[in-house]
Length: 75
Image 1 (tube, one colour):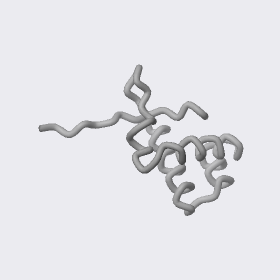
Image 2 (image 1 turned 180 degrees about the vertical axis):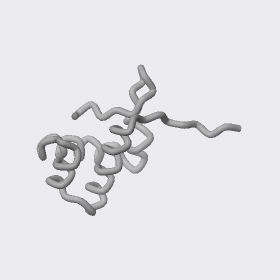
Image 3 (image 1 turned 30 degrees about the vertical axis):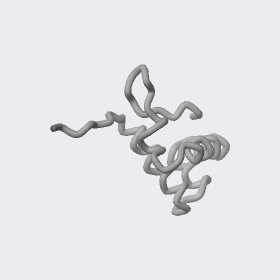
Image 4 (image 1 turned 180 degrees about the horizontal axis):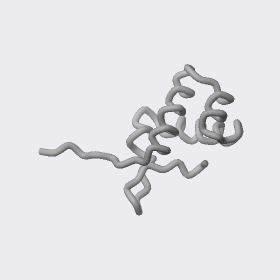
């Protein structure tokens, strides 16, 4: 049986990696904004959006039903 895979672009993987570090307290919002070429306000919006999704936020709630790709609609 083959495991299910979630396809993501490199950009999507980068956003998830940086934002997971922000959520865990290893990076600040300002650092994330610089790394992602976004404003601090945009990073705060993404952070709030991710925090509302619970422990499975990396797998559930980020998948666009139309394309089956990981998305963050608040960016």
